[in-house]
Each structure stands twice: as C-alpha cells, then as structure tokens.
Image 1 (tube, rainbow, N blue to C red):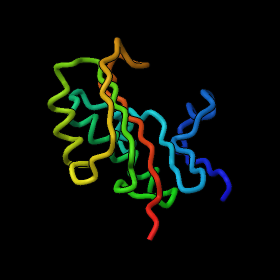
Image 2: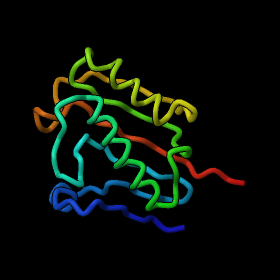
Image 3: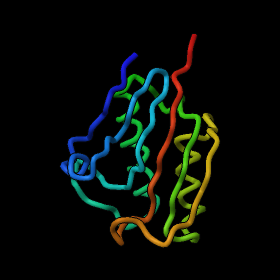
Image 4: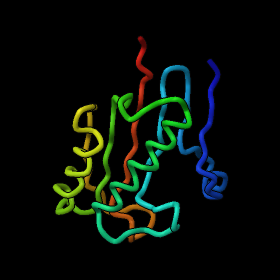
Length: 129
C-alpha cells in the first residue's frame, strides 16, 4: 500500500510542509492538532472546547484515511498549563475511554499561538479481522 497524505486544506500545511495525517500501510500518523473550530475558524478560550475540537479534527482525518478513533494506539498530549489537565482528561475519557491507547501528557512552555492551550497527536493502526 502506498503512502497517502491527508490535508485539511489549510494553507499553513503547504507553507510549513506538513500533512494533517500520513497513511502508510496499516498505520495512520496524525500531526499535532490544536483546538481550532474549522467550521467557524475560531479558537475557543477554554481547554475543554479546544480538546473536543482537537478530537473532532483528528477523527475526521482518520476517517478520511479509512481509520476510526478505535484504531488509535498512541496519543501524546501537550498542555500549556498543568491546571488544565483534569478538564482535558475528562474530554480524553469521552473520546478514548473505551479505546485506552498508550498516552503521554507533557506540560509545555507554549504552543505556536498564545491562545492555544492544547495540542494532540495520535498514531493509529488499522485493526485486522
């Protein structure tokens, strides 16, 4: 199976030289995804909404590549404030509570823009019958 690039259509993808996701065989690698609401092109102020938006964008990219959230085997979370961890984890539980991938949380000094509170990247492996 050949490599396939998934794009959200953001001009930043071309400028920065990245894809929202790369499908390679039975694996999907989803790039770090922040909490923009792509329907309104706005960034919510709270980490809960940002985390939900991250998962919605990730889910759409996976779906386009023929994967589902249930295929996620690894997740890395980047938060700019440790105080947001509980709210963020509550959203993780909504989306991944039954899937339970291996996961890592990192508290970082900042993300690209100051309004960004969370970034999530995942790896998925297609399940075989």
